[in-house]
Amino acid sequence: MILDEIKAKFAEKIQKRPDIKTSIKFDMGNDGLIYVDTTQTPAEISEEDKEAEATLTLSKQSLEDILNKKQDPKMMFMMGKIKVKGSMGVVMKIASIL
Image (tube, rainbow, N blue to C red):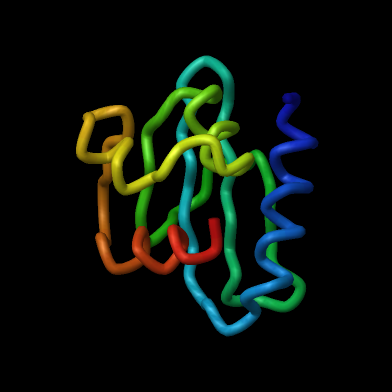
């Protein structure tokens, strides 16, 4: 999956939960990053490195698995495949979207 496809998946999922208002960054190392800001309408989904309430560090494959419902993000966190920096509350909000 290329980053544009990942961003499209985010946009699709965010439309189903317009009540969640937060900003989060998904840092995939050398594979890039995705910034999601649902505090504005329409939600901003970009590859820009902006300030966010929380940052998840994970592999691109892990993010794809979460978006395609192949993996549970909570289980991946407990296994150490996802690192969190910032607000855990924000992470839980985003997990409800994914």
